[in-house]
Length: 327
Image (cartoon, rainbow, N blue to C red):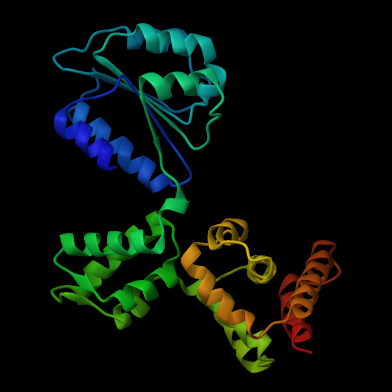
């Protein structure tokens, strides 16, 4: 983002930009930044977007070779078209020969870095790779503070960490919840934990975590209470079962990989959770041994099979599972 901001400030643009990676929020922000810097709002004469997989290379070439009309740039956006796989030599030829006044932005979540198209863009254009693994807890905490700071709001670090535990590391989710917190706080400057509890919508995952925690403590009343809360939140029983299994698998992965002394980045990637969530899950592990975790996963799989084969109703099945897990 710093490099793109610098290019925009200096009006020093490349002919081709490839925006990629598994952090879609940052890809979207980068795309909008570049578009707004090159093309005036509402300028349909000098802007065209391709968003489906069947892109006509002849049409693309015609547009790419057309000079802009009362504008410094003509911008073509290729968003999720798969052209890096399908375009190959023809697309490279278009990029090589189009005038300097044309700019192409390619947005693809995944790319083959061995391909001729990727290597050409890497050498002659600009590749922006936006990855979740780079959005560490520290980075996200700074971002949260910056979002709030723009609205003259502030938050204590411990409350910001608490907020992240509820929202997770999805940047779209974080931004939406921050906007809600700003509106909820009104004229107050500080965002408190009470504000987060009142507004942040991490309810379902929190309830699942608490439910699994209650199972570890053999607290049947608490487990059924959390389950009933999820039903009131209109969560389908099969989705609740899926989330329970997911939580057990996360715990199992953390336990195994910790035993093998794997680094936290590898654990987070394998478990499919942000790195900063490892600590919270490790606290829950204290109530579970490896054999108990394996037994819980096996019980879940068995109930899922019984539900899918029609031997038991989904709601009754999940409720009986909770009881069996606490025997």
